Image 1 (cartoon, rainbow, N blue to C red):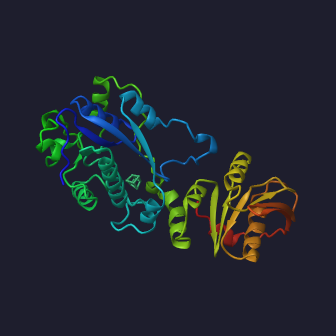
Image 2: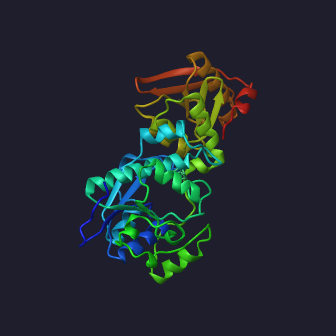
Length: 344
Ligand code: SF4
């Protein structure tokens, strides 16, 4: 059933990244008296940062941008549903492992549910037609709207004049004449509007989704193919160090002393980390394979990456969720398999 807003105040949900396009889309509609509710998705692949325990309670840049605009803000964590489309996208992937069309369909479905929950009437996004190759093409936009059950409900104020009128326009809740006709990747018109509206602070563009990064996608593809039941923990683990695939064993090798400590903290209570006690060297997480196979990979990695001139064996503290133990790892100079297994 078509939602029927009170004539006094029109309400909409805006998909709000906190970037300039979403800020401009919000400003365009606030100027028309539309009440907005910002919905911000926390995508697990959106940043290289790994969530830290002291993040709780911190305001994100998106939340600060919403506060500056004076609109209520809700953050939604994308979890298992999102990982499922990374594993098996129905509408294919872009140049990396990015399942953009499925990702947008999921986001719009969730936005529609939120819209119904709060009694709003339509959905707004800062999308610009032709800006992104996969999800912001004309035909992709139609596919996304149809498959998300949001046909006619999604207003894209920055490109609205290039698209068929949506429900808020045909119903006269929004004046189409005051919307924009921005197309493509140039940011010139957005910069002009930002200057005109004196929007001084906004995060730079450049879409940080790691799934569009071809180097990072090598690790994601390895995860999808070798561990299809992966969880959020495994996704965040991709953001650490060097990754190796040697047969059934995956090794994550920290790149610096500082990363050793971060990797150990991140894995505490969740996975075993091997910390070399006898030689300066990387902390290593080993997943998959049997104990003998893991030990073989560990001995070659420690031999290759430990910085002491002294040869092995190595005394290693294995810190696992079940406790700690010290193991002796022999030296092994056969690096060929490990070198071939470097993912990135
Ligand atoms: S770039 Fe990443 S977050 Fe953006 S639509 Fe594609 S998969 Fe989703």
